[in-house]
Amino acid sequence: MARQVFTVSQVNRYVKRVLEADALLAGVFIEGELSNFNAHSSGHLYFTLKDASAAISGVMFRSHTENLSFAPKNGMKVIAFGHLSLYEKTGQYQLYVEIFEPAGVGGLQLAFRQLSEKLQQEGLFDEARKRPLPAFAQTVAVITSPTGAAVHDIIRTIRERNPVTKIVLVPAKVQGEGAAVELVQALRDVNAWGGADVIVIGRGGGSIEDLWAFNEEILARAIASSNIPVISAVGHETDFTISDFAADFRAATPTAAATAAVYDYSQVVAHVAYLRDRIVKRLHTHIPETLRAIDGMRTKLTHNMKQCIHNRGGKTQQLLARLNHHTKSRLALEWQALSHHETLLEKVSPYAAFKRGYALVRTKDGVLVTAAKGLTSGQNLELAWADGHVMAVIEEIVEH
Image (cartoon, rainbow, N blue to C red; front, side, top):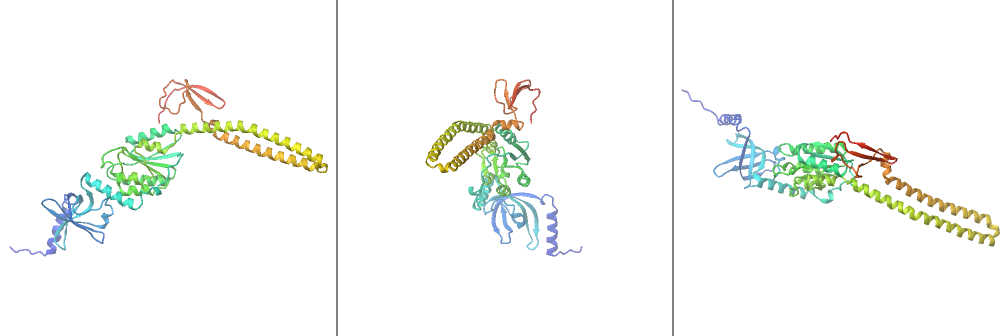
């Protein structure tokens, strides 16, 4: 039987095809410790992945290193995803890595610390860069999962504090693969729309793995570059994420975020009533004093003019003209001030709201009604306007 002789190149090409055709080796996760790590000037990473009894060479090309969330180092335990193939030039098989992750919670904490330090050095967390929240937000964009508990807490709190605020829910994944990308896209969509005064982004509590989307670099940069102020509301009071540091305002909980996003409508109404009372009191105090001063000035001018007429009979008409001019000017100034105060009073008056179609709603016992929650069918209500009031009975309650 004639023997068949192969070249080294033929053998290597054959072995390479065998390795790359194996379905198991075409996409495999391998855990091990990094050694011989070399970050080449070309941008490629070369290393050895080893455990207690074996080792395998590996490489990560520059096209994949841009997605790293941490800085690999010798001695670090990692999980690598990639495929096995043969490097024909040396005849050595190796792992071609596409994704690196730190192994275990300790690894995630390391990645968190490294990224946090990197972004802080860039100035991404500087307080001077952050913007104040709007004092009177009319529209709030909420970026979160539409099925989580956080969205219900946020909406309920906003409606309790300010029922006239518009809420726009922008649904997005908040954990798992692709969550950070969806959150970034939601931020871009809200900024492109431009109709929100403030953005609330977040979710309820969870483990460090559950919250990891909010520790991704792409999301932190998207939050920092937002044209609209961003409130980060991730987890519970003890949970901190990189999104919290990048946001304009960090809320300890989703409920606290809703409280920070909108003003308390009842407090504003009370303050307007206080200002109205002060203006009315000032008007009642100063107008009589002004009129008395004008009368006194008129009397004094008349007396002086009589003296002048007596002493300078030839200038009678001139002095009378001056008297009339000064009196009319002073009266015009005082009436202008009075008109200004009346305009201010009209602006802060609750009757202005009545003219726009609003009504004051109270229960039969006189308790002010600010929300549909707590009302029942058949309950008697009093609706009041500037020119009168009516009694109404609730037939049906429709929840939003």
